[in-house]
Length: 581
Image 1 (cartoon, rainbow, N blue to C red):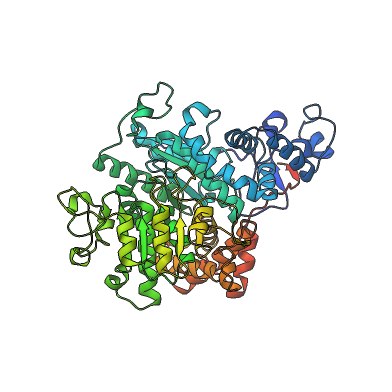
Image 2: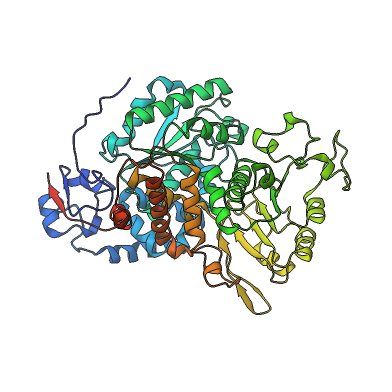
């Protein structure tokens, strides 16, 4: 049943992007205190307490946001382990969004691994046990005929009109953060992504909707768990799955015409198909294909010989972005560019003797001619020769080694030393996300390469040392680029997010690499976490300029007004005066 789009206006906090000078609301008393967008807790002024019936419902003292953050940090510090800290921050998120984001801003480097990878992955795995309060929209297959109505329910939480929704993050939970199929628990990644959009990109938290497509799960552990909260069925067959996704996209197009649609953690068999099907129909983005590829490309624009270990959604996405960059910048053909990339997966090196049914469509695009490798040593007992990661490194002498596989501890000292022996400054990117299945620690890589390696990881790590010299470790995390891309799309509302727009984002961010700017390989390849919000402004401006140049922007913006419009659209965690509606 489709709900009517009209609703009682309880407040106007979500009426426009960015911050308002004041907010009008009908809410009073406990209802106001229970609204996370408007609640100020002990920071309500005396006038607001009298106007909105809060006297007697709050302690006497009136605090500033800074004082509240100090108190909240002391409470956070008492939490004994990362998951407990994650749960504390989620609780704060439900109570007071300004305080939540204000606290995160003040302790960004410390708290980013708690609200996102790696700790969020642990929370998602335990979702049915850690569940306290729902957040987001749960679209379950049995309710397929009511998707539009269920999505509309997602606007009610923040009293937003459908036209006000800027961003929707959706997952089907099949390939969550390197930990696989997590069923309904995947809603946690949609929520976490939107937190980063707000924290790093300034997207208004009242103008977004997190969504999970609960299409079943093939995780038998979840299906057998009596406390599992999702739809207790195996994942849908392809035809039914595609029909369900089509209904979802149509509902988004009809109900939320201004929304930018972000696909997150879809499995290899579906992610590319979905992106190809919908990228010309609406402004949409797949973070694992386009985001992972883009942020990795920022680090390796000069790629010569690249091995990608792990040929799933993220690995193929990286390969596609590198190929596109070489075609664009080095004037190579697609075939020539693809030859720079060597994919190694669970079947070993991807080559043309492997039966096509064992490979995905994306893997086939990078399959090596067998005559290139037929003379290599193979110890395989399969019906076709297989070549390990070590054999590939030994034979092609790569300059770049990228890992997206979840197989643990597969980058051995032997492999890293073999690479370093043939490359003066090897670029080594173990991008496992979260940290549990990582291949090698940065400190090991620095030691095994005698301080020669340029390292970027998928999760945060401290600096490493070699002979008293310190080396910063870049966190090659999508969160450095996708918030800025999303912000640019929110401001100029392009009809589509094309490769040209993503390339503009990549170029703008790569130009601000500390290692490149200062020509110092001991520095990070990416801006620091503390500079991430500035990076989002840079990326957003680049996306808008390219969208205007390509005639894709629905909003016309003068070139000298772009940065001002971007900054004005960014929401900041600040208390603003409340007025009685």
